[in-house]
Each structure stands twice: as C-alpha cells, then as structure tokens.
Length: 406
Figure 1: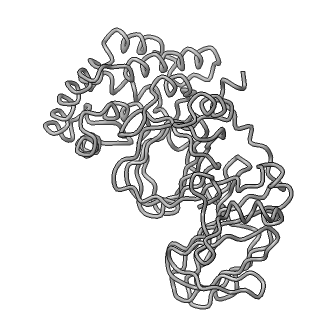
Figure 2: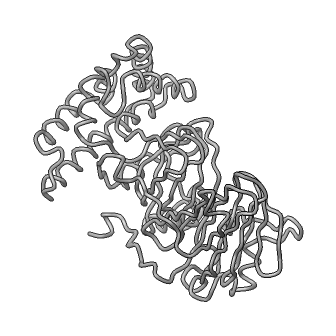
Figure 3: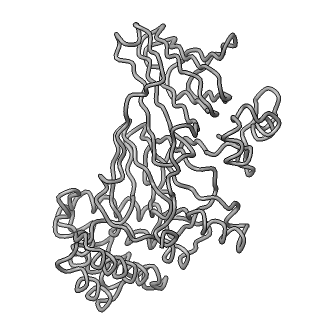
C-alpha cells in the first residue's frame, strides 16, 4: 500500500493510482512532506502472512542504495534506504540481528557441522579474539569483535554448495536424533528441542540451504500480538512464520543471501552489515498511548485504546486502534501529513468531514493531510492500523550506517 512506482495502490472505483493522485494534488501530502520526499508517500505499508520462511536479507542504507541502483537497477529498483518496523498480528517468529557473541561461540562448540563448514581455524580465531571481551563496551574491543564476527560470518557465507549440502545432512540428522540435547541443550533463551524443531522445519522448506547455518548466528525472536521490533538499515533478518503489519521507507531494495530462490548477492551482504551484536530485546519496541485521539466514553468503558509505534526515523509511524464495543468511536486530530488506514478485524465506519464509508477487515483507505479522521465500531472487535508521516516534531533519525558515520 503506497506510491512506489513498481506497484502503486489504485482507487477501486476510478482505477487511478495513488501516485498520480498525490502528484496532482500536493496538498494531500502537505507541503513539507512533498518537498522532503519528492511528491510521493515516504512509506510502504504491508500485511504479510508468512507461511514459509522469507529470505535472509538486509536493506541498504541510503548511500549504498544509490550505489546499488546505479550499478544494477534490475535487482535494486530504486535509490532509497529501507528501515522497517514489524508489528505482530498473530504469534510471529523470525531472526533479527546478530546474537550476543557468547551465544555464537556456544554454537560453534556444540554443533560440529557448523564448525566444520566454517573450518576450525576460522572458528578458533573468532573464539580467541572475543574471549574475555564478549560484552565489552571499550571501542577497541568492540571493533576487534566486529571484525572477527565479519570474518567468521564471511567464511560461512562463502562455503561451497557441496560443503553446505554435506553439512546440512549432518545437521538435520543431529537435530532429529538429539532432540532436547541438540546444541548441548541450547541456550537459556531457546531450548535444544526448540532449536531442533526449527532446524527440521526450515530444512523441510529450504533443503540444504545456507540459511540453516546462518540461523545460529542470528537472534531468534518470537512476538505476541501487539509486540513490535524495528530494523535499521543494514540489519540482517528473516521472517519465519506469522501474520504481521510491516511499515518501511518507500523502497524495494533487498540484499538476499539465503532461504530464497531469488537473486542472491552474498558479497554485498557480507560487506554491508554493521556486525552489531546484542540481545533481541534491544530491538523490540514498546508502544505508548497515542495522544492525538479522542475516544468516546463507550470506548473507554470497554478498554478500547489507540497505541503509537514510533520508530526513530522521519518516514513513518503507526497507530493501532482497537474499539471493543458497538458504537465506540475514535476521533483523530488532523495531521500535517498523509495516512493509510487498514482494517484487520471487525467492521465499522470511517469518516472524513461529511464523507462516511463502510470499513471492514481488508479494506484500505488513504487519508490526505489536514483531515480529521473518525473511526466507529459496528461490533465488538474492530481493529485498524494507521500508518502516517508527519514531519512536525520528528527529528531526522540520522539513519546512516556505521560506515557512513565514519
């Protein structure tokens, strides 16, 4: 949902694209947004239903996106960065960012097929470098750790297809045989039986794939409905299962390296990552009550609410609104920027001024700048998500990679 030229949204009645609409009427975006982002929506809004693992990937920062687009416009169709936010609609699991270094070292010691694929010399060099400074905040130690992580990850990603196939067979056999004892019982955060079942599940979807081993380098994350996480540019990740709301900067640039039949660009991926390593909790987001909405007394009495997910970038924010009683109403103050609203559960009405339309699960509406928006429930479980951009009060995120900062 958006104005990306590869597939802009269309009005179901007129078949006019949203891109044409906002370019012909700049006021729908607001002057500030139109000037800042070139007369188009600065975000893409998505619903993903992940029944099969999506590719191990990262999105380039702005500078790299420009370079990749200039070099290979077929596989990198625009010159924009793509930080993104994920909000769980159902129970979700995925991979996000590099694990703490001690966890990676644990798997190198307890999963022989992983160590053999990387080769013992590379694994030993990694272990030797990080020993005693796995969580150090000293800049020199952190730099050493990141360089060691990049070397060992590059060794994994450059393994031959024949070596990957052989190691995958051994890995899956161990997972099936060892169960709860797999990977020496796993980690405090993830049991051996969970790791074992995940390996088997992923292998059934992508047999003999390098992603089976990348899995042990990345944080495994589960989100309950309403929980969220934010991914900066250059953050490696993969979505494994579940239904999610996804909002991102308006880009279609993806650097893939596993769990996919699509174009893979391993050298770019290995080079672009920041190699930051941290527990997944550091990337999870905590929503807060949205201040610019009025809920009527019926809504308050039934625990209805509007929650704001506000990442540290200027392109987008998202509000989740739940109205849990018939007649409950939410009135949103006018914004100095555009919005897209999608209903994910229930039914009701959406109004801007005198214009009122029916809205129910799957319905999507564009709302122009400076319009007061009203949502009203016609049942007992009415849920909508609203993505919007308003530059007022939003500081520039400085969404640059560590390479660019240097």
